[in-house]
Image 1 (cartoon, rainbow, N blue to C red):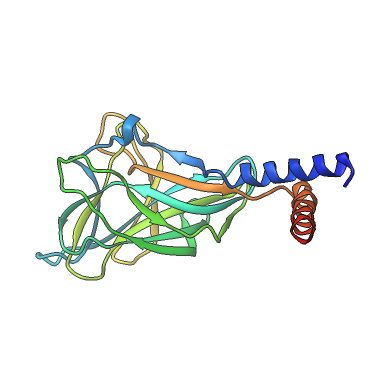
Image 2: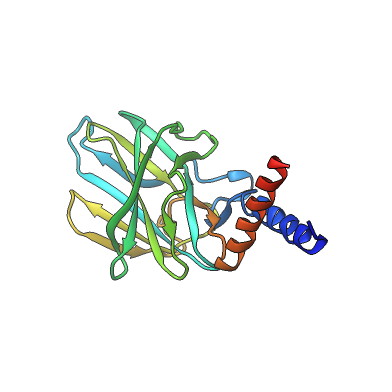
Length: 216
């Protein structure tokens, strides 16, 4: 094999390995050391011992820098009572509120109030492609039984856009105000870049080179 081809194959292998090394963070409002408000958060409930209202909460993020495979979301959920299972939905944006559901998963591992625990990780599997320039919404709700939890507030003064759905009605968008109890829930969005089209021929070349070496 001529040295230019060998060099191209080596470059392709390095590019492939580099792309698979780790996910990028598309959004994060955790404080240093993954700290968050352990006392307060946005209510998520489904009934509860007193038969209260049903609350679902959502927050947006916008993709920049290319397309990404959606790997996972990390949040902090404070537990009051009921099952600790949390349902996660990825929504399209529809006029500034959550629209169609694009992907879903579940996670558990809630934290008692007043106690700092590692974030709950919701694994989305890395199959859905988040498109560059698009806004998406991450929505959380509880199990459909008596439950009361809260999506913990951030402590980095993020008062950005959020949305709430009450009793399965329409989504309503809100923006928090500094100096009030209206911070956004704390969340991190992890995703892996989709390889650029220009890199695909090199990846194919690397595969052919490996196959030729195995046959030699």
